Amino acid sequence: MSGNTTVINRYLILAIIISLLTACGFSLRGSGVSLTDSLPSLALNLQQPNSEFSRYLQQTLTSSRVQLIAADPEAEIATPVLSVSAERFQVQPVSVNPLARAAQYEVLLAVTFALHSGAESLLQEQEIAVREIYFENTESLPGSQEEMQLIQDDLRRELVDILLRRLEGVNRQT
Image (tube, rainbow, N blue to C red; front, top):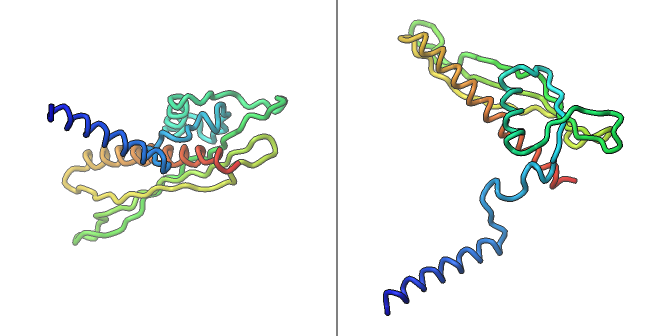
């Protein structure tokens, strides 16, 4: 009998903790306002529509259940238009090795975006950027090039994630 009491007590304590957490407003990241709550449909104005960043942005928006449609200036209800500039990729040496060659690089990836609905600006034009420090392996140049490609892909994913979080905030601002 005491075994059943301990199990019941554990479930009771767990239920109380969950109730307290939800009562104070706690929620897991991503489980609150979804992107489709704030932007069920969206038109894209991409400066580089065939770039890796643009493809990843479109895939992520589609998987988030945002309907991507063509912008129609004649429509009665204006569809929000997300304008995204070309991605800016920059590599700068940070440190040099004893042979006076760059050993460390700072990799920067940035885009500028704005969100408009008709004449109304939902998000002012702003730049988002991500950086990463990259150590070049002088022993294996092909490996370094592959690593640079992986870093670029990671930075693109991170930029898209930041952009989506900004878009989710549109609902809370209006």
